[in-house]
Length: 332
Image (cartoon, rainbow, N blue to C red; front, side, top):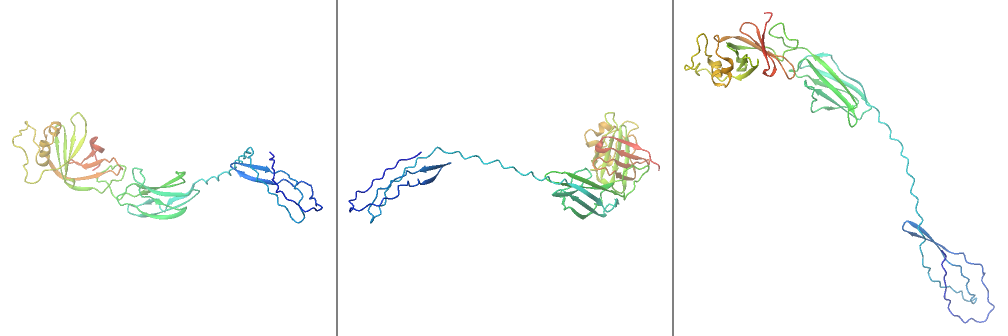
């Protein structure tokens, strides 16, 4: 849009002279650029032909400043959407090796683990408990290295380790297992096909048979095992032996039927005072027998069998958690 501008010229009475006329060529219009919010406006000023003035005075025209009228805003084009370079694909984690320096070791022996991996950013080695659970704390390891580990003396059968490599999660893993020698022998044969948890514990013992079960006493554990065979379930339970020397050996007011007996000492105290035992076992059918017994357990991680030498030379096998029992014959 063009704007018309009028200039008020001052009144001057000049001395008569031959006027010198300025070139009548139009003065180029001035271009003013003004920055407005989100738009750029361009303004044009008018051309003007000045009135001739005396040669001795150069008139300076006074021109009113133009009032800028904004143009319709020109939309600013949206910047082009940048094209992103594809992210580099992380190298896949690879475990090249993870091994122990021996295949077989003794409980208590120190072994060396070595490893070599690539492609990941983090790696950890865990020791595995016999339940399969991961050890805490673990070892944070670099791409290559070695560490020494001393096997616990009580560990049996095998010891295992696992290496995990990955970014946010596990993308590669490898385990290594070292077989362990068995340091102990079973006190009977044929023996179970697993190493015993410990060496045999030999101690004083006692055994007594009842109408519907058996009682066993193991001095080493100061414990009485009650084996029920009452037709309901063939289970067993263990109790602490609460009888001490000097305590009454029996209750004279309890009279057994002919041919049967009231148990005495620790067996008798438990039989009389522990609810349900007397009813389930019934009366003793023979006297209590004292002898040298032995005890061992299997080295299963959670559910171990218990073996107790019997008075007749056999072995009582007690299944895990009191679930069952039997007397097994031996080769002795």
